[in-house]
Length: 289
Ligand code: G1P
Image (cartoon, rainbow, N blue to C red; front, side, top):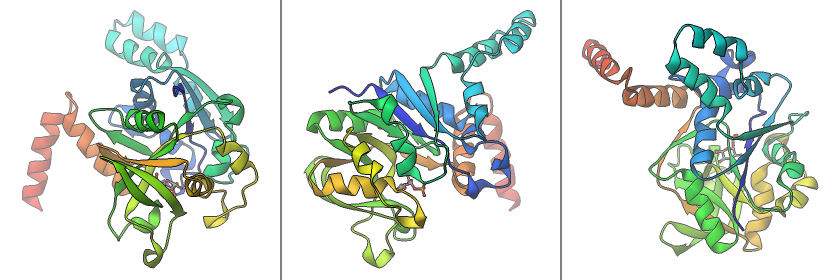
């Protein structure tokens, strides 16, 4: 069955980026000239997704305002002949059909996904975590969707990470099925280094079949006292209903300061308005270090 819907959980408190994220949602921080969330929505749209649900909370209404029209600003830009800015402002509101639901209680990623049950209904859906920006030739979520459709299964996007960071992720136990595709046999959320199944970490992209909702509904809190999505997926994986895709592309974790700065520098170097200038600036800085 075709994947037509996506869910973006964006109801976290942004505690790794305080104090900046006290009143500005971390998903709305500017990545060069667009908010982080826009890159994630653009990836979903590029993969053919039409309907997107953002799981939000009471402190994050800046997200729904951003993907709406803003007539006063648009009239002002039009009158001033600022066509490029006008186009950019309107384009954000026209990207996709965007829906919102509030998580209401901060109970973890698994609980946030469970809140999308009414939106999703009875079909497979994509999940894109709100802090992970991907750079790739083919949209990363499109790579995961292709394998989920091929194997008629749930699927997660993975890449190998080092021992230093593996305990920050959901990790899979898997056997190869095809080039860059694995059958997942088991999963664990943020394992201790000595207990890790592998170095293949789940990096913020999933395609889930709707049976996940019944699992999440009854699931006890796990790591950190929160309802973990990985614990729900583990149940699907031990039943043989999960594949993993070692996706092509670079992932930036913009939910922590270093990842955010790395993405800012890389994207600014590629940006037509800042690229050349930043190259010179960095050379000068590096020479003075
Ligand atoms: C979440 C998931 C984890 C995944 C990670 C990166 O953790 O629970 O399984 O590996 O995102 O996408 P968080 O970074 O929110 O602690």
